[in-house]
Length: 359
Ligand SMILES: C[S@@+](CC[C@H](N)C(=O)[O-])C[C@H]1O[C@@H](n2cnc3c(N)ncnc32)[C@H](O)[C@@H]1O
Image (tube, protein in one colour):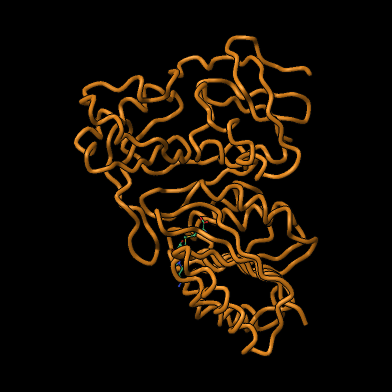
């Protein structure tokens, strides 16, 4: 095996094809398993992701086998990234009483060159110290903000500036897309990168797609790039999201997205008036189910991907609701599969329902 790294630091690593690299990188980051102080390796068509020295992933082989076929675990040497601190930001953190260390966040969102971090009440007074430690340990990061939750129907994050540049506009890179976003004005999460990639591998050659809650356009752009002959209608109620979506369409040089600003419930009937849609994306996870009725009226025999935040014991009822609604419209379901993408709270899960309609 040819590895393009020096033999600096020996680590266990996940070996995966480049086509699934971003999805696996994001999963490892979410699990806190990726050693971000080491340079990701390359071996022909494969990427090699170094795991933290204290990784628990190899103990539970099932954990990474769940990601599917073609993923291996190997042991080899990796090059240290200059300026990155082993052990992450905790190693640079000063001024925090030792007893509060267990309350420190184990991960945070990196959006472009900005970090958004949730803090437990116990460590909130030390937000400035934590943010300075992040800036010191992550040379590419320019500003750090505390996440105080999302509010309103536009799902906009309430932020507190903690350290570095007090700027909220940034460009986030995901796979080969560049996404301009303003973390204070629109909703965007890097955590759905794997999901966008999955849908971009599902789309056919020439589909009519409705992205009902499109935000700055990450799903629409991923699909538009994967299928240039498709026609993608991207709707969002937030005018700032539409302005950024239009910029992102230009940045990513796609020509098959038609943005619409307004309420998806009001706009959808007219958009579906001419020809039914082959695929609909519904990413308003607290209330997507309320819009299903509207979408079914404009669908052909295609796919609906409905994102849903639910209590785990509500899954059966939500699936029943979907089935009943489809049947009451005189339509038929070919398949309905529901999959947990990530945990949302101790009792709630973020689930995608993939629904395929048939004639
Ligand atoms: C969870 S975000 C998803 C954004 C985008 N799909 C993404 O993954 O980044 C939901 C989006 O729906 C928009 N929204 C909320 N209610 C809406 C409505 N009734 N009609 C259209 N858009 C709406 C919000 O402005 C927000 O951008």
